[in-house]
View 1 (cartoon, rainbow, N blue to C red):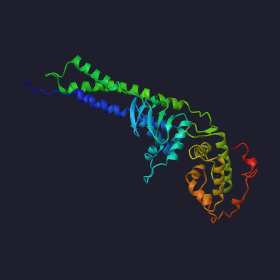
View 2 (cartoon, rainbow, N blue to C red):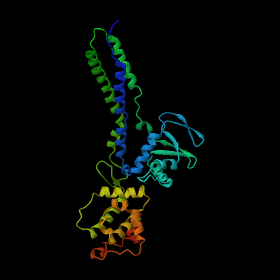
View 3 (tube, one colour):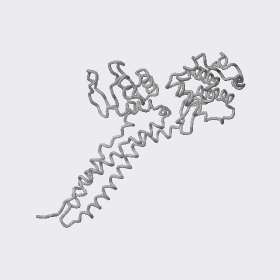
View 4 (spheres, rainbow, N blue to C red):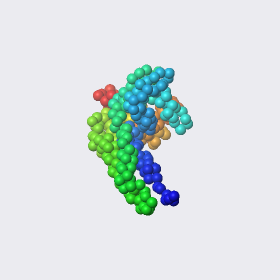
Length: 332
């Protein structure tokens, strides 16, 4: 009876194949493509979008939701704004309100990223547009690698009594590694098609100003609002260097699209902050204004707060009054 030990090459190949699969699932390319979107700076929008992608059906099936059966196609999921909000919690564990989720879903619909059908309370079917671009498949990769390895072992014979385990193992490892690497490169090529398309489309159609990458941009009205705010800031803090106007316009656009503010509301609150005895030195950009919006709104309603008393606070801007009909004509 032979005492030769046989190596389980099939098992070893399966381990390596699974490891390569984990590296090639496409989550990193997917996440990078999402981060390139201008709206990805909003962590709630980005997280909600990730949840929608990961919750969508990878193939047709019937889902059971709220006592009903929902036939779903690839790229669809059934849910409610309240359920989505439960998965979007702040650091204190508080879920996002249903109204806030509805606003984010409306934004996705407006951007052409999803479509929604159904009733808000009982459940709605959300369809991810171009879902296939986010869920690249490699169904045949493990089978191809396994089949090739099996054929290779058959052609060269099973590990025989006279064959050294080390030599055969090294040959099998090198050959399988090369084969898997080739499939890996092809997979990366396929999954990066969406990313390449994003890099090519750097020019944002509605942008009056934008960064070279197109990740920050604003419309002509956003830019005009940013320039107005800069002129006011230069009165209170003339020593500060000129900011990146694409970044300013982008923050203003985010306040409009995500927070529901108007240009007039943005300018009014910024104007008040520039005259406040405390906030004039802290609110010097649209980003800071957005971050402290709720606090500023509360403070503006406090009649006991004192305005600045220095000369620069009382200087008037060049041109018509900021809140005159002429100043806002064709602006909002």
